[in-house]
Image (cartoon, rainbow, N blue to C red; front, side, top):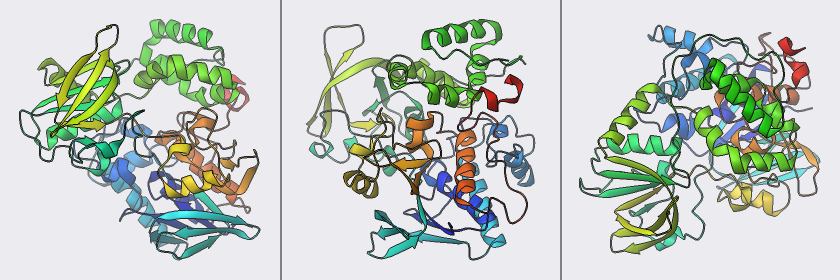
Length: 471
C-alpha cells in the first residue's frame, strides 16, 4: 500500500500532486531547489509585466471547481476578474495559499526538503532517493515533477566558447539586461512565448536598444480576443491530419479560428493517443509550429505592447536559420540565412539569448537525476524526444518497455504520451488522477475529492465514449 510519495520538483506540478495526496491521507515529501514551494520558475520568477496566457476563469487549480481561482481573486480584492489576464506572480500566490491551507489542515502529511535530487534506486520495498547533500529519502513511490528544463544549446554550439555576459543559455537564471548600453543590440533565438517574456523583461529592466528575434519560420504567438458564442462540435473530429486541417479551416470560416482551435481541446489528447508514430511525426514536422502559435496565445495587453515595439522598429522578428555564432571581443558575430534567400548575412550583437524553448529530450538533459535514470535504463525517452516515455497512467517505461508502479512522471515531461499537458487545465487533471491511482483507499479524508476525470478543457485518456454529448 502506498503511504509515502517522494515528489521531485516543487513547482505547480509537484505542489498540486502533494495537495491531492494530503487530502487523500497520504504522506508526501517535496524535494526542490528553490526557496519557496508552489511556484516554480513560471510563477515565482515572473516579473509584474508577465501575465497569464489564459483568462482567470480557466485557471482553477481543481478540475471540479472551475471558479476556485476567481473566487480566491475576489476574496483577495480582485473583483470581476474572470476574463482578466492576471499577473503570473498573483497565480503563484494562489498556489502558495493552497499549499499553506493543506499543510495547516493536515499537519504532518507534508515535508518540504530544500535540496537537489541526484539519483534514485528502485527496490522491492519502494524507492530510495539520493540528495546532493548525501543523505537519502525512503518512500514507496517517486514522482518526477521537474517541469520544463532549460533550453538546449543550438546544434553545433558550445556555450563554453562564449563570454558569460555575451551568450545567455538559460534566460531565467540571469538578468538579461545587466551591463547593456542603450546602443547595444540583442539577438533572441526563438520567436515563441519565451521570446515574448524576454522582450518584456528587457524593457522592464531598462534596456532601450535594438532587439532582434529569429526562428526558422519567424512565427509569433497570436493573441486572445473576445469571441461570439458558438455551438461546439457534436461529433469526434477526423483523426487523419489532412482531413482534420480541412475541418479546422471550415470551422474557422464558420465560427472564427480561435473558437475552432479551442473546441479541439476536448479531443486533442484522444487524437494524440490514437495516432500512430508516423502520424505523430507528421504532425510535429508539418503542423506543430502553426498549432503552437494558434493554440498558445498571449494576453491582448501583451500583444499590444509587442505590436508597438514592432511598429517603432525597436523589435525586429524574421525567419532565418543560424549558420554560425562566434565570439569577437565582447560581441557575438552571427551568420544567418533568411528564409527564401540564398545569400547569408552577418551581424554582430552584444548579447545572444537562447529562447528556443525548453529542452525535452532526456538523453541530452543536464538534470542529474534524469541523466542517471536514463543511463541506467530506468527511464527512456519517448519516440519523438518530447520527454519521458510514460503509459496512460503516467507510469514511466524503462529501457525494456516495462512500466513501473514505483516511478511516475507528470507535467511537460510526459508530453510524448499526452501532447496537451503543459497548461494548467490539463496538468491539474493529471495530478488528480495520479493521486487517485496512488491512493488504494480511493477516497478523500475530507469528502471533497476533485473528480480526477473532470476538466474544463479535456482530460487524460479520453475517447469519444468519455465525452457526454458525443455518446
